[in-house]
Image 1: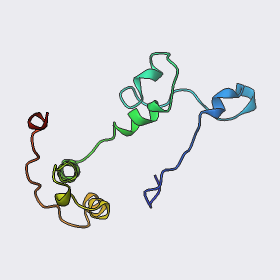
Image 2 (image 1 turned 180 degrees about the vertical axis):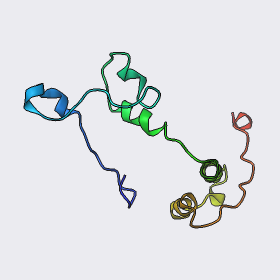
Image 3 (image 1 turned 120 degrees about the vertical axis):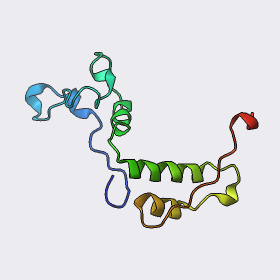
Length: 112
């Protein structure tokens, strides 16, 4: 993602279709076990889902994690009128505005 939160695509996997002498691009596994998708170590076909796995394994500070959880709780409130706008959600995630303590969400079990 760039500084404006726009997704950037860096690789469609097309380099893997080329022979080693046709490119200087290295398409083999890079990274430490635990930070790369398990599919790389299992000799299975690698798909775009490998990138999704890697995105989910980033380290986070406790304060940042608390901020993310609070914002998530505001976003999943059953009553739509209590949910914030996406602009406010972004500002809360960035730390630009304070995040009030969210009300307790309704139990999912009671809605089934």
